[in-house]
Image (cartoon, rainbow, N blue to C red; front, side, top):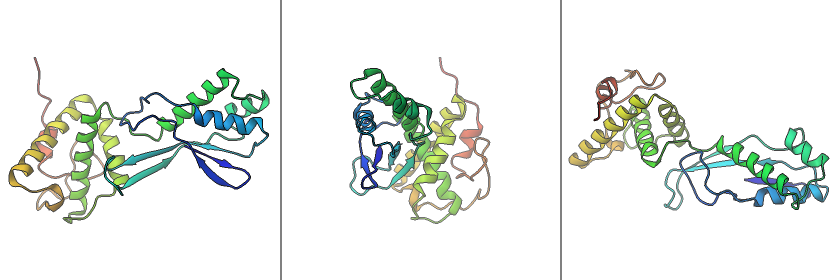
Length: 222
């Protein structure tokens, strides 16, 4: 999260989230960004914009991990909430204004954040997307675009639950087979099935390893 200092035209970062997450259900959300904005407006600094920035790290622990940066819809002059805060001369003593602005920042940040049911689903959809895109270009040891992987993983996550379940099973079986062979997906090149498209994904071919399970009906439990 950042807003721009109108005196220096430089962004001033603020981190309202308490911790990283793989869902759009935000953890406890800090009010610092809203308070900074209200202080600036109260001091007559109107030429500013609050810009929600979503960061998706490939590895949240590793140093120099790849990251996807998404900028959300800014809160600035012309935005109804922004104009209302200016018109009412709201400041940090107005708890309703602080809460309203914080909630709006949170909602716009959620729009540019990952949205998976849980961590396991996030792993399954990302592994599936990675395998699909790696087969698409067919060149071993070539990194898959992290931005495209996140986009495709999000598309897979929007599929019906039964199809997501089958994808999860297929990914688990695929990973188990590779583990037994002591190889990783980045060294595998698909020799057959190039150009085939599974029922659940229109825009990218998929490794034949994954196709059969995705086309089977979901297993019944009980």
